[in-house]
Length: 295
Image (cartoon, rainbow, N blue to C red; front, side, top):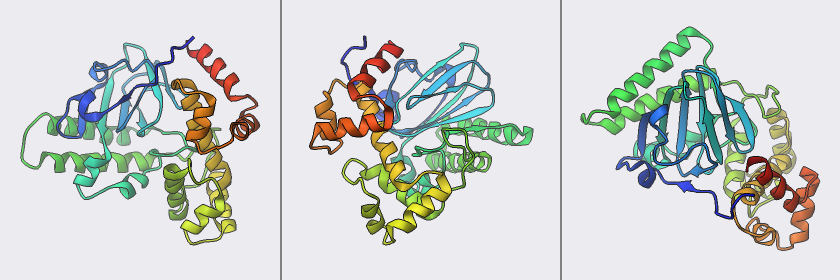
Protein backbone atom coordinates (compact mmCIF):
# COMPACT_ATOMS: atom_id res chain seq x y z
CA UNK A 1 0.00 0.00 0.00
CA UNK A 2 1.24 3.44 -0.90
CA UNK A 3 2.33 5.72 1.91
CA UNK A 4 0.40 8.90 2.56
CA UNK A 5 3.24 11.15 1.45
CA UNK A 6 2.10 13.62 -1.22
CA UNK A 7 3.59 13.39 -4.69
CA UNK A 8 6.78 15.49 -4.92
CA UNK A 9 6.72 18.60 -7.08
CA UNK A 10 10.14 19.74 -8.30
CA UNK A 11 11.23 23.32 -8.93
CA UNK A 12 13.53 24.18 -11.83
CA UNK A 13 15.75 26.39 -9.65
CA UNK A 14 15.97 24.19 -6.55
CA UNK A 15 15.93 20.74 -8.16
CA UNK A 16 18.14 21.45 -11.15
CA UNK A 17 20.23 24.05 -9.31
CA UNK A 18 20.08 26.47 -12.22
CA UNK A 19 20.30 30.26 -12.09
CA UNK A 20 18.59 30.47 -15.48
CA UNK A 21 15.28 28.61 -15.87
CA UNK A 22 16.59 26.48 -18.73
CA UNK A 23 18.49 23.19 -18.68
CA UNK A 24 19.93 20.75 -21.18
CA UNK A 25 21.27 17.35 -20.10
CA UNK A 26 21.77 13.88 -21.46
CA UNK A 27 18.83 11.60 -20.66
CA UNK A 28 21.01 9.10 -18.85
CA UNK A 29 22.34 11.87 -16.58
CA UNK A 30 19.22 14.01 -16.31
CA UNK A 31 17.49 12.57 -13.28
CA UNK A 32 20.26 12.41 -10.71
CA UNK A 33 18.52 15.00 -8.46
CA UNK A 34 15.49 12.70 -8.01
CA UNK A 35 14.07 9.31 -8.96
CA UNK A 36 12.17 9.74 -12.24
CA UNK A 37 10.91 6.14 -12.06
CA UNK A 38 8.62 7.18 -9.19
CA UNK A 39 5.56 9.33 -9.81
CA UNK A 40 6.37 13.06 -9.63
CA UNK A 41 5.62 16.39 -11.21
CA UNK A 42 7.38 19.71 -11.64
CA UNK A 43 6.64 23.37 -12.19
CA UNK A 44 8.40 23.53 -15.56
CA UNK A 45 8.14 22.09 -19.06
CA UNK A 46 10.20 19.15 -20.26
CA UNK A 47 11.08 17.81 -23.69
CA UNK A 48 12.50 14.28 -23.75
CA UNK A 49 14.15 12.83 -26.85
CA UNK A 50 14.81 9.09 -27.04
CA UNK A 51 17.59 7.60 -29.17
CA UNK A 52 16.39 4.04 -28.58
CA UNK A 53 13.38 1.91 -27.69
CA UNK A 54 12.57 0.10 -24.47
CA UNK A 55 10.55 0.74 -21.35
CA UNK A 56 7.60 3.07 -20.87
CA UNK A 57 6.67 6.60 -19.92
CA UNK A 58 3.46 7.13 -17.95
CA UNK A 59 1.85 10.56 -18.17
CA UNK A 60 -1.31 11.23 -16.15
CA UNK A 61 -2.33 7.55 -15.94
CA UNK A 62 -1.71 6.85 -19.65
CA UNK A 63 1.20 4.56 -20.50
CA UNK A 64 3.25 5.25 -23.64
CA UNK A 65 5.99 2.91 -24.87
CA UNK A 66 9.43 4.47 -25.28
CA UNK A 67 10.22 4.41 -28.99
CA UNK A 68 13.33 5.37 -30.91
CA UNK A 69 13.41 8.89 -32.39
CA UNK A 70 10.40 10.10 -30.39
CA UNK A 71 9.88 13.37 -28.54
CA UNK A 72 7.78 13.38 -25.36
CA UNK A 73 6.41 16.64 -23.95
CA UNK A 74 5.60 17.23 -20.27
CA UNK A 75 3.69 20.27 -19.00
CA UNK A 76 3.81 21.74 -15.47
CA UNK A 77 1.77 19.82 -12.89
CA UNK A 78 1.44 16.71 -15.04
CA UNK A 79 2.10 13.56 -13.02
CA UNK A 80 4.52 11.25 -14.77
CA UNK A 81 7.11 8.56 -14.25
CA UNK A 82 9.78 7.22 -16.58
CA UNK A 83 10.96 3.62 -16.61
CA UNK A 84 13.35 3.14 -19.52
CA UNK A 85 15.83 0.46 -20.41
CA UNK A 86 19.33 1.50 -19.43
CA UNK A 87 20.41 1.18 -23.05
CA UNK A 88 18.04 4.00 -24.06
CA UNK A 89 19.86 7.32 -24.27
CA UNK A 90 18.78 10.77 -25.39
CA UNK A 91 18.34 14.32 -24.15
CA UNK A 92 16.18 16.32 -21.72
CA UNK A 93 15.41 20.01 -22.22
CA UNK A 94 13.77 21.79 -19.28
CA UNK A 95 12.45 25.35 -19.13
CA UNK A 96 9.70 27.31 -17.44
CA UNK A 97 7.24 29.99 -18.47
CA UNK A 98 9.45 32.66 -16.93
CA UNK A 99 12.17 31.78 -19.44
CA UNK A 100 9.74 32.38 -22.32
CA UNK A 101 8.46 35.63 -20.81
CA UNK A 102 12.05 36.80 -20.42
CA UNK A 103 12.42 36.44 -24.17
CA UNK A 104 9.22 38.40 -24.92
CA UNK A 105 7.05 35.31 -25.23
CA UNK A 106 4.64 33.76 -22.78
CA UNK A 107 1.48 31.77 -22.33
CA UNK A 108 0.19 32.42 -25.85
CA UNK A 109 3.50 31.17 -27.22
CA UNK A 110 3.29 27.96 -25.21
CA UNK A 111 -0.40 27.45 -26.00
CA UNK A 112 0.34 27.59 -29.72
CA UNK A 113 2.00 24.18 -29.43
CA UNK A 114 -0.56 21.35 -29.33
CA UNK A 115 1.54 19.02 -27.18
CA UNK A 116 1.65 21.34 -24.14
CA UNK A 117 -1.18 21.85 -21.64
CA UNK A 118 -3.54 19.54 -23.50
CA UNK A 119 -5.83 16.92 -22.00
CA UNK A 120 -7.25 15.37 -25.15
CA UNK A 121 -4.21 14.67 -27.35
CA UNK A 122 -1.14 12.47 -27.12
CA UNK A 123 1.94 14.59 -26.17
CA UNK A 124 4.33 12.67 -28.42
CA UNK A 125 5.99 13.38 -31.77
CA UNK A 126 7.51 10.51 -33.70
CA UNK A 127 10.23 11.55 -36.13
CA UNK A 128 9.88 9.08 -38.99
CA UNK A 129 11.32 11.09 -41.88
CA UNK A 130 15.17 10.99 -42.01
CA UNK A 131 15.44 14.67 -42.93
CA UNK A 132 13.15 15.73 -40.09
CA UNK A 133 15.16 13.59 -37.69
CA UNK A 134 18.40 15.17 -38.92
CA UNK A 135 17.06 18.69 -38.41
CA UNK A 136 15.87 17.97 -34.88
CA UNK A 137 19.12 16.16 -33.99
CA UNK A 138 21.10 19.17 -35.22
CA UNK A 139 19.02 21.45 -33.03
CA UNK A 140 19.84 19.38 -29.95
CA UNK A 141 23.53 19.67 -30.81
CA UNK A 142 23.23 23.45 -31.13
CA UNK A 143 21.29 23.73 -27.87
CA UNK A 144 23.96 21.63 -26.13
CA UNK A 145 26.78 23.78 -27.47
CA UNK A 146 25.06 27.03 -26.53
CA UNK A 147 24.04 25.78 -23.09
CA UNK A 148 27.58 24.73 -22.25
CA UNK A 149 29.24 28.04 -23.03
CA UNK A 150 28.99 31.52 -21.54
CA UNK A 151 28.78 33.56 -24.72
CA UNK A 152 26.98 36.88 -24.89
CA UNK A 153 23.17 36.70 -25.28
CA UNK A 154 23.15 33.03 -24.29
CA UNK A 155 19.52 33.02 -23.14
CA UNK A 156 18.37 34.66 -26.38
CA UNK A 157 20.21 32.09 -28.47
CA UNK A 158 18.83 29.21 -26.40
CA UNK A 159 15.29 30.54 -26.81
CA UNK A 160 15.79 30.85 -30.56
CA UNK A 161 16.89 27.22 -30.86
CA UNK A 162 14.10 26.12 -28.51
CA UNK A 163 11.53 27.95 -30.65
CA UNK A 164 12.76 26.27 -33.83
CA UNK A 165 12.74 22.88 -32.08
CA UNK A 166 9.13 23.40 -30.98
CA UNK A 167 8.11 24.57 -34.46
CA UNK A 168 9.73 21.50 -36.03
CA UNK A 169 7.91 19.29 -33.53
CA UNK A 170 4.61 21.06 -34.25
CA UNK A 171 5.03 20.44 -37.98
CA UNK A 172 5.45 16.73 -37.29
CA UNK A 173 2.75 16.51 -34.64
CA UNK A 174 -0.29 14.36 -35.38
CA UNK A 175 -3.47 15.42 -33.59
CA UNK A 176 -4.39 12.06 -32.09
CA UNK A 177 -6.56 11.88 -29.00
CA UNK A 178 -6.00 9.48 -26.12
CA UNK A 179 -8.40 7.00 -27.77
CA UNK A 180 -6.11 6.87 -30.82
CA UNK A 181 -8.40 8.84 -33.14
CA UNK A 182 -7.18 11.59 -35.46
CA UNK A 183 -8.68 14.97 -34.53
CA UNK A 184 -8.64 18.42 -36.13
CA UNK A 185 -6.05 21.04 -35.25
CA UNK A 186 -7.67 23.37 -32.70
CA UNK A 187 -8.86 26.82 -33.75
CA UNK A 188 -8.03 29.97 -31.82
CA UNK A 189 -11.40 29.72 -30.07
CA UNK A 190 -10.80 26.14 -28.92
CA UNK A 191 -7.28 27.00 -27.73
CA UNK A 192 -8.62 29.94 -25.70
CA UNK A 193 -11.35 27.79 -24.18
CA UNK A 194 -8.91 25.05 -23.21
CA UNK A 195 -6.53 27.59 -21.70
CA UNK A 196 -9.36 29.14 -19.66
CA UNK A 197 -10.59 25.72 -18.56
CA UNK A 198 -7.08 24.65 -17.49
CA UNK A 199 -6.84 27.71 -15.25
CA UNK A 200 -10.40 27.74 -13.88
CA UNK A 201 -11.87 24.21 -13.88
CA UNK A 202 -11.91 24.07 -10.08
CA UNK A 203 -14.21 27.08 -9.79
CA UNK A 204 -15.97 27.25 -13.19
CA UNK A 205 -17.68 24.10 -14.37
CA UNK A 206 -20.39 25.15 -16.83
CA UNK A 207 -20.10 25.80 -20.56
CA UNK A 208 -22.29 28.91 -20.24
CA UNK A 209 -19.78 30.58 -17.91
CA UNK A 210 -16.87 29.92 -20.27
CA UNK A 211 -18.96 31.10 -23.23
CA UNK A 212 -19.68 34.36 -21.39
CA UNK A 213 -15.96 34.86 -20.78
CA UNK A 214 -15.34 34.34 -24.51
CA UNK A 215 -18.29 36.53 -25.53
CA UNK A 216 -19.97 33.81 -27.59
CA UNK A 217 -22.98 31.55 -27.18
CA UNK A 218 -22.69 28.25 -25.32
CA UNK A 219 -24.04 26.45 -28.38
CA UNK A 220 -21.35 27.89 -30.66
CA UNK A 221 -18.63 26.99 -28.16
CA UNK A 222 -19.91 23.43 -27.81
CA UNK A 223 -20.25 22.95 -31.58
CA UNK A 224 -16.75 24.27 -32.29
CA UNK A 225 -15.04 22.22 -29.59
CA UNK A 226 -16.97 19.07 -30.52
CA UNK A 227 -16.08 19.42 -34.21
CA UNK A 228 -12.38 19.87 -33.48
CA UNK A 229 -11.80 17.51 -30.56
CA UNK A 230 -14.60 14.97 -30.83
CA UNK A 231 -15.75 15.97 -27.34
CA UNK A 232 -18.10 18.67 -26.13
CA UNK A 233 -16.86 21.59 -24.07
CA UNK A 234 -18.63 20.10 -21.07
CA UNK A 235 -16.85 16.75 -21.55
CA UNK A 236 -13.46 18.49 -21.62
CA UNK A 237 -14.28 20.38 -18.40
CA UNK A 238 -15.28 17.10 -16.77
CA UNK A 239 -12.06 15.51 -18.04
CA UNK A 240 -9.98 18.21 -16.32
CA UNK A 241 -11.86 17.79 -13.05
CA UNK A 242 -11.54 14.01 -13.17
CA UNK A 243 -7.85 14.12 -13.96
CA UNK A 244 -7.09 16.39 -11.02
CA UNK A 245 -9.34 14.26 -8.78
CA UNK A 246 -7.42 11.14 -9.80
CA UNK A 247 -4.08 12.86 -9.19
CA UNK A 248 -5.14 13.90 -5.71
CA UNK A 249 -6.69 10.53 -4.84
CA UNK A 250 -3.56 8.68 -5.89
CA UNK A 251 -0.81 11.02 -4.79
CA UNK A 252 -2.10 13.07 -1.86
CA UNK A 253 -2.97 12.14 1.74
CA UNK A 254 -6.16 14.24 1.60
CA UNK A 255 -9.50 12.68 2.42
CA UNK A 256 -12.24 12.40 -0.20
CA UNK A 257 -14.07 15.20 1.59
CA UNK A 258 -10.99 17.46 1.41
CA UNK A 259 -10.49 16.66 -2.27
CA UNK A 260 -14.15 17.38 -3.01
CA UNK A 261 -13.79 20.76 -1.26
CA UNK A 262 -10.56 21.54 -3.18
CA UNK A 263 -12.43 20.88 -6.44
CA UNK A 264 -15.23 23.20 -5.31
CA UNK A 265 -17.81 20.56 -4.40
CA UNK A 266 -19.46 21.70 -1.19
CA UNK A 267 -21.31 18.40 -0.90
CA UNK A 268 -19.11 15.27 -0.88
CA UNK A 269 -21.98 13.13 -2.12
CA UNK A 270 -22.20 15.26 -5.30
CA UNK A 271 -18.49 14.70 -5.91
CA UNK A 272 -18.87 10.96 -5.29
CA UNK A 273 -21.77 10.78 -7.74
CA UNK A 274 -19.87 12.78 -10.40
CA UNK A 275 -16.78 10.58 -10.03
CA UNK A 276 -18.70 7.30 -10.16
CA UNK A 277 -20.77 8.41 -13.16
CA UNK A 278 -17.61 8.98 -15.18
CA UNK A 279 -15.40 6.16 -13.89
CA UNK A 280 -17.82 3.48 -12.63
CA UNK A 281 -15.91 3.59 -9.34
CA UNK A 282 -16.28 5.56 -6.14
CA UNK A 283 -13.32 7.80 -5.26
CA UNK A 284 -12.30 5.41 -2.48
CA UNK A 285 -12.46 2.40 -4.81
CA UNK A 286 -10.29 4.22 -7.34
CA UNK A 287 -7.76 5.19 -4.66
CA UNK A 288 -7.47 1.63 -3.39
CA UNK A 289 -7.14 0.04 -6.83
CA UNK A 290 -4.68 2.56 -8.29
CA UNK A 291 -2.39 2.39 -5.25
CA UNK A 292 -2.51 -1.39 -5.37
CA UNK A 293 -1.60 -1.32 -9.06
CA UNK A 294 1.53 0.79 -8.66
CA UNK A 295 2.69 -0.37 -5.28
